[in-house]
Image (cartoon, rainbow, N blue to C red; front, side, top):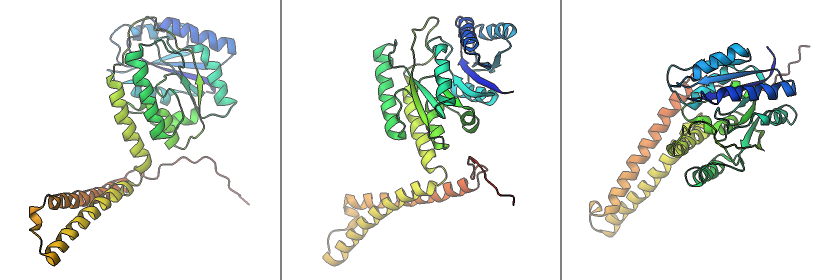
Length: 317
């Protein structure tokens, strides 16, 4: 099945907005003559969202649904949608009507015509509360840019488009949906772009996310940055840090011993710096051993040689 576009929509308790969203997507697809499918992933809704998805699918075969037994989070919903998607371009959007389906043709064109692997939406003009969303979001995006090197203004925007190969290569888990561009970059997809998109006021319901998402987000960013840089060579991190700590501790201990032997100074153990030296020696040794253990685990992992082959040229003559 060769489709132009797959739309993946993670949702929870959005029964009121789904009919309007499905009709809007269908209109845009028909106007642009796209072949398409829509995967609505019900992430443990407690309202009638799944019944609405059933009705929409009965009326339009292009609408398909996935229902989770309970709430697993947006990352799990996106990952399952990516597994099912068959379109050449995969577009994600939220179900609350704050993302406009009218952006679909532009996002599709940037992938197919401009050669981007991933295009992230940028809600340049927002209608959220400034204190609780805009300011934390700007700080979050600034930190992500600094740590990842990817120049995007709005990592957390749910409206994104992907080349099919991208979504079939990456895995989204935990709270990593905010860092899909970072995951894609670490997987070898370097052409990542941005498009200014319309942000609409919420028409139905309330936001499902609180301020805790930013705390979790920074922790996830640190995690993915570490795994991306040192996941295949943990000894380079733990070994280097352990060696540094051990050398500092050794130099301090050597100085104290030298002063004691040649200058007959006070007892080594009476100086506070002695305990600092011992602490650094112990921590340095532990970090070094941790690096060895992590290296053994990494080299024996089933995915230790996981990599993406772009193309193979082979002369049969």
